[in-house]
Length: 295
Image (spheres, one colour):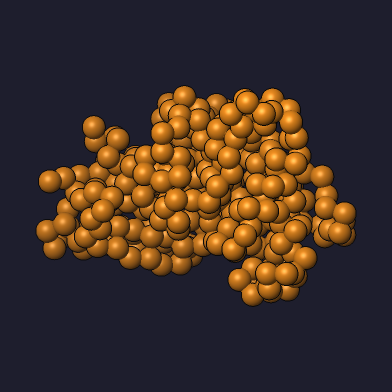
């Protein structure tokens, strides 16, 4: 049976695995995202070490943080573009992994790969039109319409859209180095830390942070539904592990749209749900990429 490699290449950490299939992980590791040279060297060493142990992979799927050049026709395919992550702009992730391991590479953004995994095995099963949103170190959205990933001049960067400010959050400048108070700048994990002086996991359930957080994420979800007509928006990432946050976002997004269009009675509506694959959406998305490229 063919074995596949998967990398969930996040802005905070990388997770690497050797798979037979989604239910059979033969080896895995994780490590912090540091410099490009150090991080890529650790990923290459993982696959080469396991090749020597009889666990050679036929292809490696990479679900990578971005912005990322994802169009195979681009001479910069597989490169990270101008990013908020220090030192990573211009890094040729796909090329260096291919050269270091000798394996063909399949690559997509982490959120688009996660969207495909959720559609195949998680909360998006049975749907051709879904969006997956991650809320963690950054905020991003992978969009699938008609069963195909959406990208044109670049892949979607929905986390950098604007939203009306919450009335109790007018003074916070935001943390995005490109846009200041875009949704990522206001609702990502670094934004929560900068605004409140503590990590999201330390904020109590009744803290006003969560109403503000739900406000911005609801605007993001409502905009995705109104602009792409997806039937389901799936939220994942570390911040979304907070109990009740998905439900808050759903209620606010539906209130924002009201009885218009897809939300009208009898029109089928839309759903906002949590990730069915939990924190493994990205890693399983990398597997999905490798399997699809192989076939």
